[in-house]
Image (cartoon, rainbow, N blue to C red; front, side, top):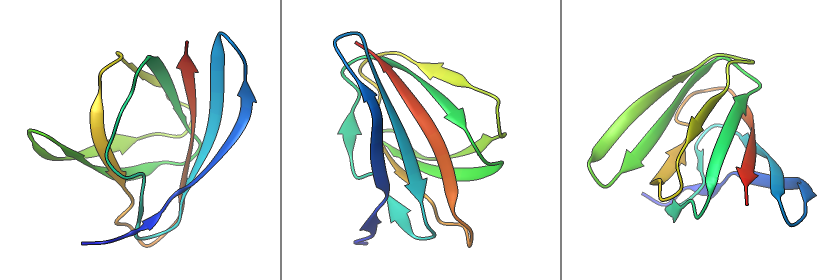
Amino acid sequence: MKRTAATATVQIDYDRVRVTEWRFPPGTETGWHIHPTDYVVVPMDTGELLLETRDGTVRNKLTAGVSYTRAAGSEHNVINDADTEFVFVEIELK
């Protein structure tokens, strides 16, 4: 299924860190990607996002202000299949 791309707005980008705001209107996705660095996600909303991974599909329950981290090499497609927009801030550690 072809979806519209979520909107990524880079807020900070220099040699040590990149901070990106991701906005997911209903029915949008990041597209498949691999994270080349460790990163932190800070949800701005509470809700669920769908993650397509090489091992299958997983629902990721997120709570506004409750951060989580993943190691470099994480591969997935993030999808908002809900009826409302979802926003998070991603901090990549270079």
